[in-house]
Image: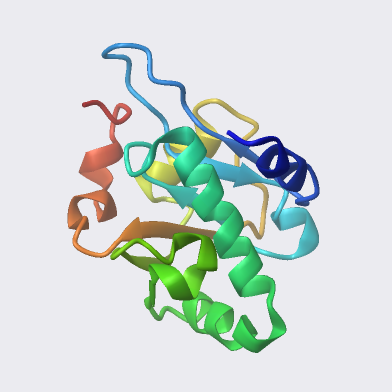
Length: 154
């Protein structure tokens, strides 16, 4: 990871938790802490999508995208039960070489990925917390509770 990436990481108003891969140990979803405090939903992502650093970068790009005033209506659409799909280059110019489509949806606090990320390790879910799941179009398995139950494994 480059030094400039780490410096940029420090200026975000949230932290990202990512599970390190240790053999066959189950992984918890990559997720944010701190967005609720600024009135935003927390972001959550499949730990196997791009690994900790890759997921962290995509969470940062998502925050940058949705914080841009010209994209605020898209955040509101997600929070009104609409799925938003963005080509990689639209999400961030840093992803212009990718062909992935990134998808965003609000998930309830009862979603198993939220349970794995916020309830089991603590500190739990505060009243009013909202969650946006990020996934790659076509990775429909990551949309199910069963995929996350017991932690994600290879």
